[in-house]
Image 1 (cartoon, chains in turn green, brown, red):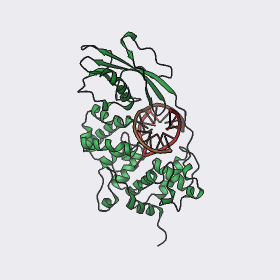
Image 2: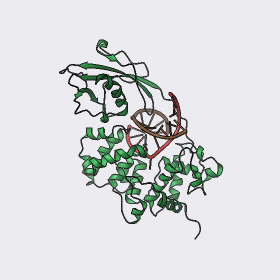
Image 3: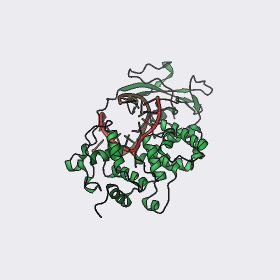
Image 4: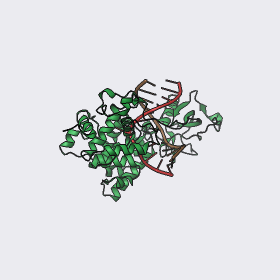
Length: 350
DNA sequence: CAGGCGTGGGC
DNA sequence: TGCCCAAGCCT
């Protein structure tokens, strides 16, 4: 027989080097006929959108312990799911996760669609995730293209076109390599390759199963690919967060509107965040302004948040928000920026 | 199609 | 410290 096809070479590498991940069925168990639970594949794929394996692991374990089936998740209260997602970021994923679980439970008898089109019709499932679930959970030969695959293809073929313009070219390259045998393992193999060997910086080309055919390696430019369009600079925005503690220990919090930044999450009442410096707090005699600002960086801007604290008597009527008793309030339910504010205020108010 | 949308780790 | 990056989706 002549040299092995590229997909076959990669599958052989995957059989020996597949990472042991909580949501993964190992190649050995797959060969013994075991199939992954589509619910768990879906949950892990949504959590992994733009998020590292290390960050996802504990969230995945907690979600599957709390909600072992899609029906369990569909029946969960919104606030509990948002609270459990707190800290993982991109909170639209959590809102869509619940929507999707409820559609699958109510309209599909709790069974995830098997086709790419059927999956992509669901909330929070786009081209990548639909292909990944269809390939991994149902072993269908879908072309799975994520950031790892784009990087691997860009290097394999020495594609100089910068992202995102190169997307269609890289998808075609991925399609030409996707095998009919073991497509689910193949999809995971390319992503593992990108995560462990063909990394963004310092790729380990010397031990790569595709070092033979790799054009970028031959040209010595692997680490320079894929090229990317320049990014916009982040502006800095300013605002004030108000932390109010009632005499009985309750904290004044509010649920943020369902759309936009941190949508649906718990947070401290406060001003808008603008590029102009924050206005003076109302009723300035009542507030104590903390000496240190909370600093946080979002995807598209830096934030500097002044923290103003106040103590109020039991029975105080807030203009906005709700008092949560220490028993009702879990700081872990806060998104990270709000958690930073809490950490600054807590030492003064506790 | 470009921009909004989080966070933590690595360098 | 500041910038880049990570298994994208939605509008």
